[in-house]
View 1 (spheres, rainbow, N blue to C red):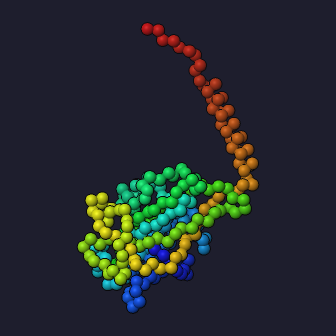
View 2: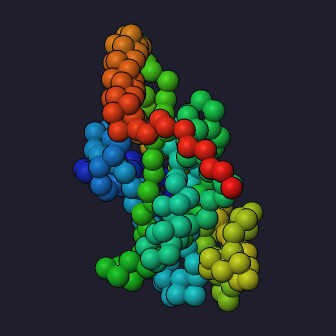
View 3: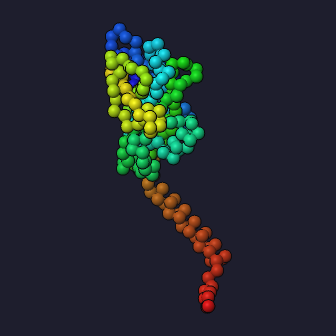
Length: 251
């Protein structure tokens, strides 16, 4: 997906055209729901990305096709595979992570990029529309000197379609290399297609809160005092209620 303009709500939308005189193959938008990060501009709360796609043309061919969005996440954000597995178990969200092993504890400066293939579900409010929500989390970032947050650029997603029984127009769609099954079933492999003419590149900027370097001394002092206090309480409890007698068992 890509965006070339913003609507009055701050959502980024675009309408790509495959060739002059043809109807665009899809319209797409990405918005935000639930609190977590903030999105710039404007500053909205974000914890899940809501991906929406509207297929062009008559829409009849889309009934036998699977629609997905391929998103590349930078090291600053990640998708929790355990959370995703739970959502897939309850048929809430279906997605494939590439690579499938994600270190959720790694900080931003040692993490790697992540590719997500998010399967879009039909929107009951629109017969040729598809949508899905993807939970996104922010990684730990190094403290900043002045700003209390850092900006993470989320690259545009790419709309893909997979039609095993239908042929797509070569003027609008071209084969895409996707390492994922068409329907989420590993035994159901078909060819994925992407739009031949991608719209103008646009980024979605996320704001992730971080600490300040000027607070380093204060954080160290508070951490040390808390550690000493907790250790003292544990030691006092052990000395008061612990049994230090040595019992020797003789057979």
